[in-house]
Length: 203
Length: 211
Image 1 (cartoon, chains in turn orange, green):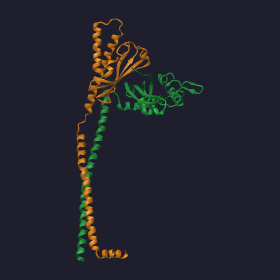
Image 2 (tube, helix red, strand yellow; image 1 turned 180 degrees about the vertical axis):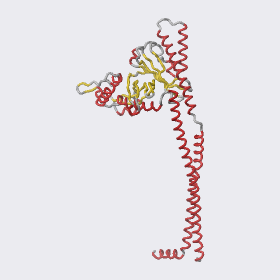
Image 3 (tube, chains in turn red, yellow; image 1 turned 60 degrees about the vertical axis):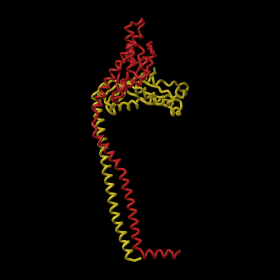
Image 4 (tube, chains in turn green, orange; image 1 turned 30 degrees about the vertical axis):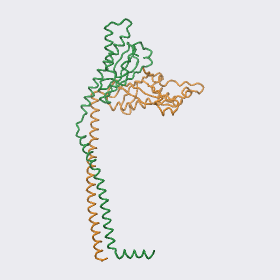
């Protein structure tokens, strides 16, 4: 064993120039392979990087839509207010028609039917068939359109107030400017409001 | 083997290694430089986009404020203020905690305020037994939805808010809130004052019943 080792050492000493040369050539090969792999690693990422740069340039060169958005918001707010006020009037007409103890005239019936159509057109879903205003004496108004949350969906709130100025109920909804309708309608009454319910039909 | 030939192999190997080191290092550097330049360009563009978006958001807020008279930032701040003001009334897990919160609201609003009368009623106590603990009642705040309904002046707004909260008996009930029935409180209040001195006042409240 010892002799074999000494033979190897002797061989290495005798042929060191060849051994150094071979090791250098192998190292060159390893270097070439490693470098090719490193370069390929970068090359693979370049197309994606160039695409991201193009996308970013497109994004940056896009014209600002701020003014248009605000204009759209103003238009949507006006529409929400107009439609909200139409619904308010329609609810009051229907509540009035139920409040009368006399037999309603044909004209009153026609007005109530027209009002129900207005409600059906402007309110989405089940809420259109329920009367929100449960007492014709109450004041019903569109109190606020929250118009800074978005252009297509604007939360709105209507309030119902008793003749004594007490809050009788709230109607919360979202105005959908694309459908031009109120959706997600939630109607709530206060205890005072519930005490003053009168028969307005629909529920 | 001829010694000369061995020196030739050695020389060739060393030359190949030196040339190899030079070429690979040049190629690596070139690829890295190209990558770094593009990555830096992308970073710079993304930075510009972020600045543009921030500027647009500021401009939009200003335009919205000009158009509506309402400061979006102010409403957001008031939502946080309202949450910290009202949360205690809807977050308690024992009679002691309820009583402590109630005292705090009485101090701030007065005993006859409709908020105290509606949501912080007296926790009836008989012989050391109080209603909240006897019935094992607990309350958990969920959300507040605020509607600015009137602008008094530039820093003073009136709001109507709806607070959603859950009454429950055991903390495990909160693991599946969808099985609990949410309760809703209707509140109106005013927020005014500047920055740290901003306060909530004119608080009124009603219990809300679904239609």
